[in-house]
Length: 233
Image (cartoon, rainbow, N blue to C red; front, side):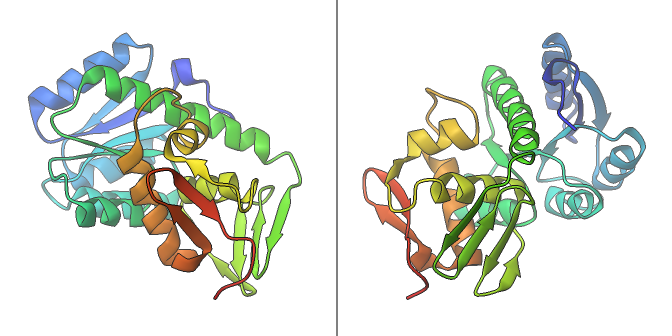
C-alpha cells in the first residue's frame, strides 16, 4: 500500500543517545512519527509492535548488530532500511546491502542529507506500488525481469533481490544496452535528482552482479552502467 511520506512512521535504532535523539527530533520536525530503539533485541521488538514504514539503523549495536537486525526484520516484512555506519569500508557496506539495506550513510553525516534520503526511500515505495499495477516483463537472453510481480529469473532459476537491487535492475532492463550514468540511476532508483550518490550506486551494482552474474552489467568507466542484452557469457 502506498506510504504517505509526510506521516510515515520511522523506527530509529541507535545506541548513542545524542545521535538517536538528534535524528528523532529532526525527523519529527519534518512531519514523521518516530519510534526509538537502542539495541538489537529492542529494535526487532519495536519493529514487530509498531510496524514502521522505514527503519534508520545503526550498524554497531549492543545485543546483536544492525546487520542481524536487518536480516530479521526483512525476513518478517520487507521494509526500506537506511543504515548508518562509522566505517567507510566497501566490504562492510556490501554486508549491509546483502542483508536487505536500501541505502547507507557514513558517520558523521548531515541531518539534512539523512532527511532527504528518508524522503527519497519513502517516495520509492510509492513508485514501486504504482509499477506493481502494470504488467511489464523484460526477457534478455536467459535473464527475465517481471516488474509486476517484482521477480527475477536467471536460466529459469529464480533469484532473490532486495527491493533496491530489483529497482536498479528494472531501471537498467528498461533500456537494455544503453549506458545510464550513475547520476541518472541515482535519480531514478533512489529518487534523489541532482545529488551525488556514485558510491551508493557502485555498491549496489556490485551486490547485484553477485546475484545475476558479473558479466550481465557492463561498466563504462567514468560514465556508468549498461545491462547486456544477451545471455551469460
